[in-house]
Image 1 (cartoon, rainbow, N blue to C red):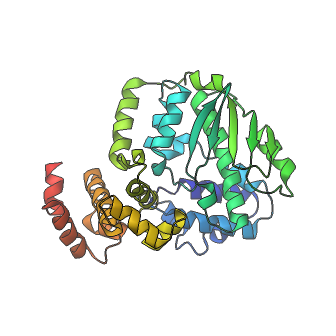
Image 2 (cartoon, helix red, strand yellow; image 1 turned 180 degrees about the vertical axis):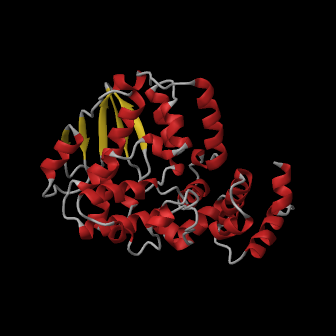
Length: 332
């Protein structure tokens, strides 16, 4: 569950194109009043539904780029401010990857340095299984967001050298170069954003080691250390953690990893676990984080973790930890 900052950006920009908030939010179970409530949290799927509505009601291909340009790091709360306080851009990129699970993730992100430049890329882009038009909208927004975030960290008009896009050349191809500020190649093997490597050593003007240390600790407490694990168990954990509140089935996760359920079950067994045990571990971890955060009631947490009621959650938490949720909170 995430703060609805992306939805706000989409709604605000869509207004400029004559699309109402009611049209954007159709089918999301949300309304504008709910989004104005600071306690409201939304899911990735609700955002994807809103983007589908934007495509339906707005034919202007500039919309996703405009949305991406208007989602600044300051909108991401702890995650965004940690990047802004980094000692170098390189350090900020490392934080961006590590704590990306806090940022309403749709595409996973990573980067690598190659000779005289570095490359942003999206390792899971071919596993993002939305209709082509929706995926293209989301990817255009993602590209614009990344460029905006680099400029936020460096506080400079640093533009990419080149962008490669892993889908066919669209009718709006010229718009990509206009909106993204660099040459764009289509039908690539993978989507990549290339920058001059010297940018990695830029010192962000907002760098602050004390604030950064506090923000890193807070981000670590929220997301845990699951991203470091590249075992099958770790991959399954990461996928579940990226979609808290939705909790995909084993079959869905197997498809996400391009495996059959039988193969996934066997690989987990080889690592001494089962999908049910991994799922339980994730829910326990999230439960402890939500309880430690202090802003959620037991009823809220039960709903966030997919329990039918608070009583079932209390029973499971007692089984996991030997403590009632109230007792666990007292020990924090």
